[in-house]
Image 1 (tube, helix red, strand yellow):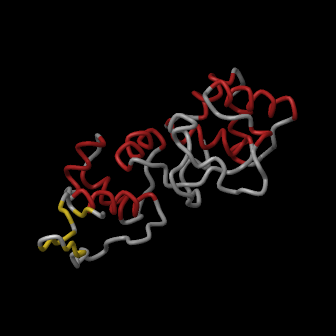
Image 2 (cartoon, rainbow, N blue to C red):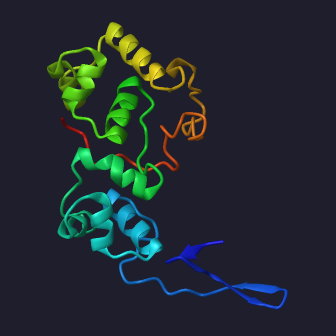
Length: 191
């Protein structure tokens, strides 16, 4: 059953239940692609105003407006609150260790410096990985994999190559993984 704005979308006549035709508001993102579109869709589904969402996220109303319209991207520090509001992670997790590390950084709203401290590495090294200036060495990859395993991720070497959606179950990995695949846009590309 689909709910829009907290209302039941079914009509019941005796024992017969029929779907109710609904009219979506103008600009409703039926197939959201950006984080702002996901935010707008969730807000409209819940029947909330932009100011109510802004209050929940701890930002100004115009900030939410700009995110929804794609004028600006949320700062990485707001991502954990946005993802909690959405109830899922709307972007894909790349299959390599560096992609998983970037994904971990995004969903936890961490700066490169904070992530580097958790890894026990220099910030410039981690920043260089994310900026594409250099790739992690084999020893660094081992360190990244050990770090991610310690945070509740499965062994990356056991990831089946035939299934690009593995792993899908958030319950298996304590909510670390996405609900549905979406491309990672400009958020968190740089430190």
